[in-house]
Amino acid sequence: MQLENYTREQFRHWTTVEVRWGELDAYGHVNNVVYFTYFEFSRTKFMTDLGLHDFFNGKKSLQVIVNCAMNFRREVRFPATLEIGTRIAEIGNSSYVMHCGMFLKDSTTLTADGTGTIVCIDPATKRSMPIPEDFLEKIHAQR
Image 1 (cartoon, rainbow, N blue to C red):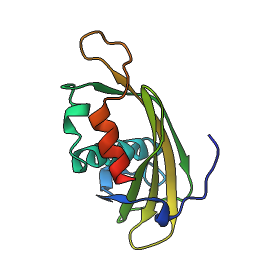
Image 2 (cartoon, rainbow, N blue to C red):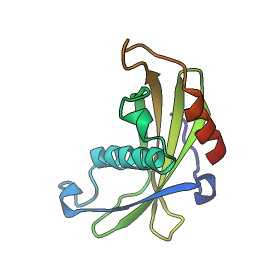
Image 3 (tube, helix red, strand yellow):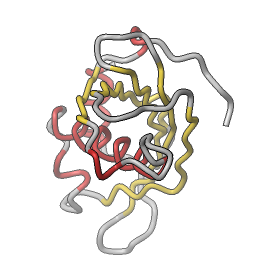
Image 4 (cartoon, rainbow, N blue to C red):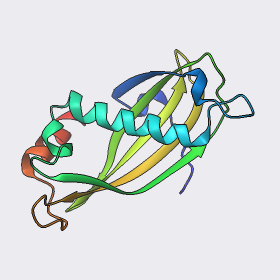
């Protein structure tokens, strides 16, 4: 994955996450696996806030993540609050790519960034399907 120097200005949607004590590893900082959970939470909140809940609960299509990568930029220790910017960066026929940038609250300090490729799957056939038009309309209106 190519490293990108994310800034807050590149994101319009934000999710706030409080770091919990149990998310720390033996070194006293947020465990790397937890960042993927933060990204999942921000992707879900992004969809919910745009009114796209029916697209990830399987009613209109299944949204299956087929690739996910994370760059760890700076350690985060407890207590901390992260603000996660989320956006859809690329849209294909049946898939799209989401990016996230994780920043310390009220700061330009980028702690991690990641990407996820999501494929739309037909709930009945379990095969990829074109991204539904009403999904695209809401995404394009947000951009």
